[in-house]
Amino acid sequence: MIWEHVYDPFQWPLASTLAALLPLALLLGLLAFAGWPAHRAALAGLAAALAVAVGAAGMPADAAIAAAVSGAAFGLFPIGWIIVGAMFLFRLSVEAGALDVMKRSVTSLSADRRLQALLIAFCFGAFLEGAAGFGAPVAISAALLVGAGFPAIDAACLALVANTAPVAFGALGTPIITLAKVSGLDEQAISALAGRQLPFFSLIVPAWMVWMMGGRQALAGVWPAVLVCGASFAIVQFAVSNLIGPALVDVAGGIVSLVTLACFLHWWQPRVIWRYGDGGPGTRPPTSGRVESEPADAPGRIAWAWAPWAFVSLAVLLWGLPPVKAFLEGRGSAHAWLPAAVVAPEFPVPRLHGRVAKVPPATRLGREIEPAIYRLNWLSAAGTALLVAALVAVPWLGIPWRRAGAIWLDNLYRLAGPLLTIAAMLGLAFVTRYSGTDVTLGLALTQTGSFYPFFAALLGWLGVALTGSDTSSNAMFGSLQRVTAEQLGLDPLLMCTANSTGGVMGKMIDAQSIVVSATATGSHRAEGAILRRVFPHSVALASLVGLLVWLQSGILAWMVPG
Image 1 (cartoon, rainbow, N blue to C red):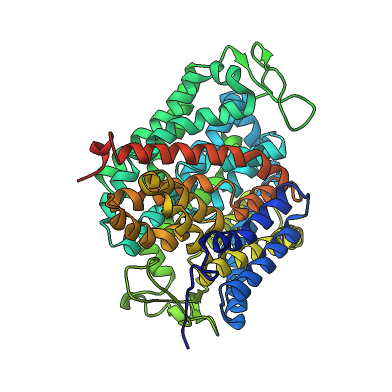
Image 2: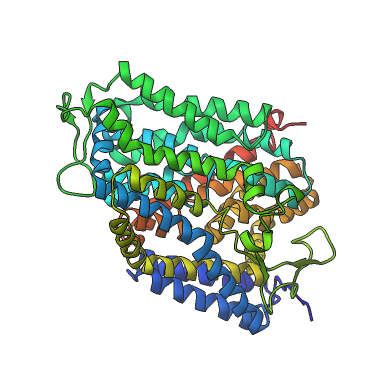
């Protein structure tokens, strides 16, 4: 028997909305203000989500439990698998001494921490987002910042904020492609409109990062580099998204901004070098004058140290290309020798697959049955690309295989807690999705009438905060955005695109990303502190996206593709 979503179970929208909000509020509250460890807060949030799904929404208990198990499995693979691979490579670099060489090479470009953050977190992180997405950019860039000498919590926060503007075009344009499928709108039109919204924030985010580090004075000292960094990415982002499509926006933008900023720093340096104080997290006034650099490593030594991360970049880019992905998943008659049942088996989730249905206004159909299929694409997963790069790096770095095996086992042991946390958080997200309580929250924002263009972006923000993925948010709310736009006489293209572009600002506060950043920086159990620091920035940036969308529904309507 198919169970249909009930979006107002109490026949009182306010009560239904508050009930739907309870699990997320409990999770974030326990994490940010009660000081609970992340795994305990996640388990409490999951328990609340199950209680609301079964007790309030009326979801069959066995289906709710199956959704939680399916979400936990997804949290371990592919999300957790990415963290395992990234941290393994990071620890190999530490073991071989390569990380110290990398640190000195970054310092040779500039000893200024503000500029190092732009190079690593924004430029390199954007490239990784375009190539892999799904947690890899935060994990890798945060780990590299710590390796470069940044305080752990600061590194985590900077990586999270930097991983915003590129997200809508992440994983070779997957969020935009998904949004086009679920909304029925033209993919190129969505890509073009997103490319007319996000470049503004590609200019803002680098400045925002520097302002977070040291305030207005810190930003004033490096504004030329901030402008070069943001503008080079924004120009490529606009051009590629409008002229080519969504797939290579971040890859091209990340490479161009990284090379442009590195070249710029060869002839320009700030007059005052900004460094963190010796007292750990936080900042002190900048140090006057240039900082004496450490003895430079030979170019060959620098290339040796960075090569494993070049392996990673190449691997995740190749793994993301559609022909390579099809080959690794055994799709197509030309690859029959690589059976999909072996390299990408699919398992319908018992007691959940085909048992739950969306109903209007969450869908344009009379009833849309929700599939629930767990896909174990172990060969084509981004985490596997990271693992392959790490295995190539073992002999390159001169580490004995026996020692590498010991590092691998110790890495798994250390990540047991974070992996449990991610599994619980994704279980919560899946219960929310399959019970329909996510749509209940979304419908509350649709009651805003003429202000809905502003809140359309916040709906996307909420979706990413709930699911940890702009792709998932678009799949969840894309159809609802179109239905609401048509009911209110608004442009469906603008409202659906706002779901993705507004959603990117929720990426820095979703529980999954918080745990990934804490794990990558070795600051496990500091998730609450990280969340408290980035939450105001997330809300402020999401509101700015909402304001831009509202203006594009009126006086800036000429910016929307016809």
